Length: 437
Image 1 (cartoon, rainbow, N blue to C red):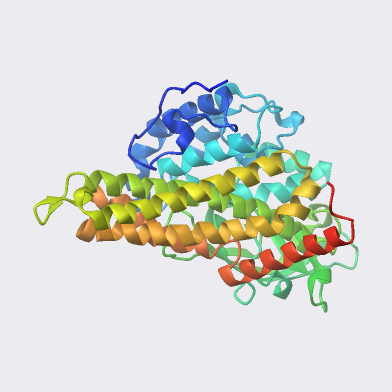
Image 2 (image 1 turned 30 degrees about the horizontal axis):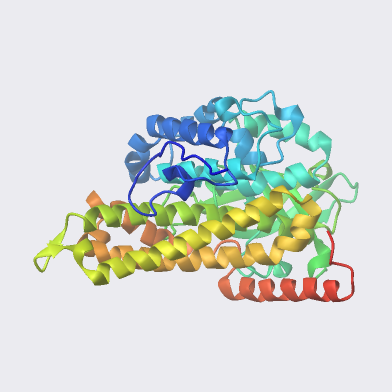
């Protein structure tokens, strides 16, 4: 039986919204996804959109917004995604969606609308990448202490992996954690760089190395509270100030052994699992960034006249839009496919089967962003270089493109990883071990 069209939502300009927003049928989205979309957009328009310019000028988001987000029910799904534990259901979830109902497509919708609002998404990067290791690998005692603080908006968390000399090569980290003679504390020394949200964080989910070790086997993960010896210094980055990108130094920082995440020597594995989550989340950001740019470029092309006719009447401009549209829709379809697969696989199978694919998806996200940002800037002309007015969002997106390309692993490293993971699965299938899930 043919599916009925639903009510369209948002912009009707080509490719400015996902196809299901336009009312066309989709196998992935249902009533609760539409309800969530409406609720997040309304909340962001009321609490975010009018403040983003002032926040950018001030160089930081109003600290009170974090508490408002907690009260609105945003922090629980941002922290846990599709794995919301029942014990944290006492905290609100936006649109009153039950924890057991929340799935990967709710995640996608939530982030699509948060990113559309501008400004706010960068506030949550630390929570997005810092909370999953706490949930998946930390002791229940530590979870019971930390989660109430961060889910209430009282405190913030970030992930501290990258170092001045160790980016994509996580095995190369040098920050050390040495156990005290009484076995009650670790003493941490070293530095981390490009740590998003670090300036305002109270907890640092940190990869550390046992002294006199090398390679992956010596790496552990510690949750380090902001305390004596931990210093943060703001780094100015190309995308702007709201991400609060930070240089972190640890000078004899004393951390209770109870803050060890899982077991010693498991930090590299824990980091790699977390990267899959981060890379998918980057694809979410990239898609909405492209759609915002397409919306604004289309709106301009429909009214801007050059050589006696509007830009959209010129074949060369339509060719630009067609090429952008096909790439964005292909990226959307691939993202939805991976979200669907993750929704129907166990966490272990999802990591085993989709790590390489997620790495390649993240690469494709960056490449599509680069293409769309440049083409939209060309269509806008001088307006695309201006931080105010009709081209402001495209100018901002153009500057932000490296934020989709660099974090989560460089293109060359991830392409190689994608091929190696694909060959690994092929080898298992040939041996008869991977043919069936």
